[in-house]
Each structure stands twice: as C-alpha cells, then as structure tokens.
Image 1 (cartoon, rainbow over the protein chains, first blue to last red):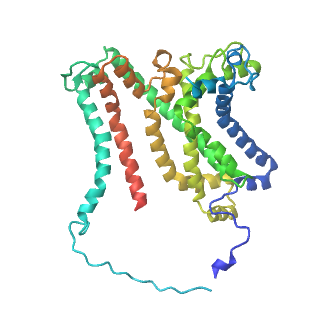
Image 2 (tube, rainbow over the protein chains, first blue to last red):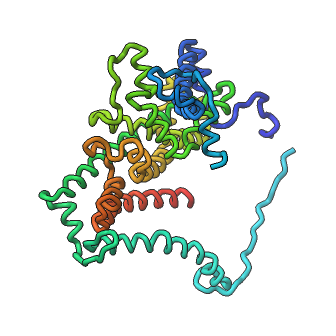
Image 3 (tube, helix red, strand yellow):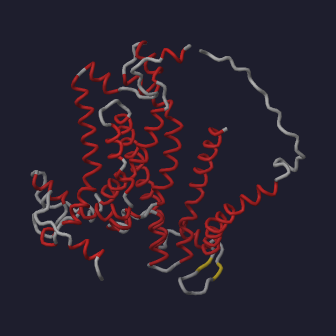
Length: 86
Length: 314
C-alpha cells in the first residue's frame, strides 16, 4: 500500500536541497549561494553579451579609445554587410 | 489495491543456431556494414595513411622517400634539431593546457552543478543560462575572447584601468607569461557546461534518503559531500575527465585563434605544432608523426574509458 501514502509535497528524487539547509542554519549562506550563482551567470554570459553588443556597435564606437559597456551608437551595418546584397 | 502478480516465464523459441546470431546471422553483418564502412573510411584509412606518411621524408607536393622511423627518432631523441625542441615543448604545453583546463572545468562544473541541483527558484532558467557557452561554436567565441583580451580596445583592459587596478594595458595574449593562462580561461569558459551537465545528471541520480539518513546521524553538509556525493559521483567524474582530456588536448580552436602558438611557442599544443609543421613548413612526414606519438596515450585512455562504460552497461 506504499503507493497510496505518497506525501503531498514530495521533492523530486535526487534534489538535495543544499541551499534550504544552509538557509535554515544561517541566512548568510543562502545569500552566498545566490551570490555565487549570480557570479557564475555573469561570468558565463558576459562574453555572449559582449559578442552581441560588438556586432551592433558602429566602427566609430568600436575603435574609440574609451570602451563602454553599452554602445553609444547602435548600427546594423555589420549585419547588412553579411546578409545584404554583395 | 495491490495486485498480486505471478512471474511469467517465457520460453525462447527454438531456432537453429549459426554462431550466436541465429538464422538471421547475415542480417547482423548487413546492418553493421554501413557503420563498418564509415569507421574504415573516416578513421582507419586516414590513420593508416598518416602512419604511412610519417614513415617518409615528404613535403607537400613532393615525392616521398621512405625513411622508416627517422621522423620519430628525430622528434624524440635528436636534441640538435629544431623540431626536437618544438616537440618536447609541445608536450609540456599540452600537459599544462590539458591539466589546467581539466582542473578549471572540474571545479567550476562541480560548483555550478551543486548549486543548480538545489531548490532555487527558476532553476530551469539558470540551468539554461549556464549551458549557453557550450552552444556557441568555438571559433566564434574564440574571436570574442580575442577581442575581450585586446590591449588597445579590449573591455578587460578597460575595466581594469577604470577600476584603477592597472596603469597600462596588460598584454593578455602577447605576454609569454600570461598567454597560456588567457587561452586557458577562454577554453575553460567554453568547456565547463559539459561538466556541469554531466555532474548535474549524476547528482540527480543520488537518492535523497542517503542525505537524510546522514543528516539524522549528524553529518555536516561538508561530510555529506565528501562521504556521499563524491564517492557516488566517481564513475561520472572518471568518464567526464577522460572524455574532456581527449577533447581538450586535441582542440586547436582556442590556441590557434587567440595566439597561434603564442609568443615564443608558449601556447603551442601538439595538434597546433603538427598543423604548423604540415601547413606552414610543409613537412608532412613530421606533421604526421607528431600526433601519432600521442596516439598511444589516447588509445590507453579510450581503452579504459570504453571498458568502464561497457562494464556499467552490463
């Protein structure tokens, strides 16, 4: 009869809730876990973002002595060159 | 309501045996034939031809002269020749590059997998995010990293300067002390998701009850990790390490695009050396011999890998 007594909020098999355990012990660890996750996400996505942004930057902005995170001038020139009439 | 089931035994139909495949034995050969042809055509033939080339003194477009093991002797033992220095340098660089990449990917992959395995909100979103680098073609991301590392307009140098950490731009790719590290970071960036993925799959296969039992017995999370998680992950770690070692040491995308062998050959791994010798120095004999000297290492790795994988299947 074990199948009938499945608890309602059963976590999936294998889900070891590191962060919840840590959160119960020390709220700081919970924050730390999310912080690490955030750092990992930035580390992972920054080159992708940079690639995207570089493809949309105008030449003036690309080779200017100051580099900005967000482009000053957006342009579709590069895409036009690749996709447009040769 | 529980249902009692009786085990049913099914008798195998009696079939005249031919070898172990039965009457349709020829079908087995026929179905295997396409795969066999692919293996022969794409693997055995190039390998055999490369071996044949490595036994000759041959330049691109020229006539080959059979010299037996001359190329190998020159690579391994002839300390006077230029290629000897280059070869052993590439051994060192390959070992450093592969070792460093494996370590970095292991640490970051394990960290990512442990965090992704937890019950955080929107974890599917985070998982998808962390897998992105693996989906980008290596050549494309290599160029992106090259631009990031640029000493004039690169964002990394700009960031460090704006934060006040450096006065003059750092030559990430041109400084012989830094070049290998820079290439390593880019390679680790791209290869980590594979490790994250396999570790995550391995972590999810561990039953929760083990952790609960350990927690009841008073084990700290660190103890739980080292006594439960790691031992149960060992097969996954082993297979992933072997695969990644083979792929990383064979890869030339990052070393070629970022530094092309690096300032003073500090980033010249053995496949890149083989490429340079074959395509820029046009010496096909040496170029074929170099990877074949590494072949036994990989063959042993692959042997243990397949043995372990087949053992787990059965």
